[in-house]
Length: 357
Image (cartoon, rainbow, N blue to C red; front, top):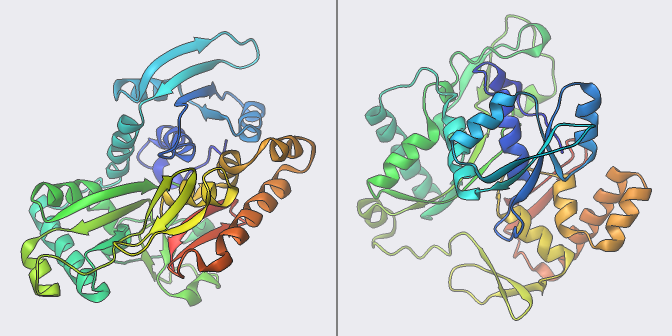
C-alpha cells in the first residue's frame, strides 16, 4: 500500500499518523464488509518497498502512531502477529472513529487559528454565494473556499505556506459549528492527504517560478465535503421557498442484484449488475467523491479472480490500469452517468477518482 502523503504534514509532526490513516481510508467504502487490516512496522527501505507492493498491507514508521490510533478508538480490536520477518499487527477498524480521527488530524494544520465566530460568518457567506451561483442547495466544497494566498516556492520548489488560509482556519471545525446551528448539513466527507497547494492560474503550472517571485496559490484540497444548505433564510432568498427544486447530488443504491444511479426524484438509471466491474468502480470511487483512490485499492475492489491471478504474473500497474479503464469504458456506454459524473484515471499519479463534470 502506498505510504506517502503530502510533506506538509511533516511540519506539524503528524506525517506518520496521517499516512496510516490515508492508507486505511484508501481501503474503505460503504460496502466494505471485512474491517480487519494488517498493519506492518516499517523500519527500513526494504520494509517500505515490501509494503508498497502489497495492497492488503498498511505501513507505519513510528510505534507511537499505533498508540495514537488506539487512544482515539480507531481499533475495535488489536493484536500482534508473531512474524519473524516483519513486526505486524492485525486490527479491526472502527470506520466511524477512523473518520473522526481523520477530521481531528486534518484541522491540526490550522496552527494559528482566527476566532471561530469570524470564521463561521465568512465561510457561510461563501457557501451562500455558491448556493446562488450554482442555484442548488447541495454541492461539494474543499479548502479552496477559504481563498487564495501568495507564496514563492523558492529553493527546491518548497512552499512556505505562512499565509495560507488553511493554516488559519480549522476547516472542518467551522463546518461542524455551522451544522450545529442548522445552517448546513454535512452529508459525506472524504480525505486526500496527498494533495499539494496548486497555482491559481493555469499558466503557472507549466513554468518554473523564479526565486523571489510570488504567485497566487489555492490551499491543498485535503478534504472534500458534500454540503447541503438547510438555512431557512438562505433557501427563501435563493429559491423563493424553503424547498429547493435542485435535483441534488446523485445517489447510488442496489435493488434485486443490480446497481442504480438516481438524481433527486428522477427515474433511476440502471448501471449494471451489482457484481459488475463498472458498478463496483462507480460505487467505490463515489464514496470518496472528488478525492483520489489509489489504483491498487480500486483494482482490489473491482477485480475478479482471473484479474487477480493475472496481476500476480504480469506487470501489476499495467494490468490494474487495463482492468480499471475497461470498467470505466463500460460505465460511459449509454449515457448512464447523464454527463454529470466522470471517473478520472491518472496514470502518472496512479490514482482514480469520481468527480462532477
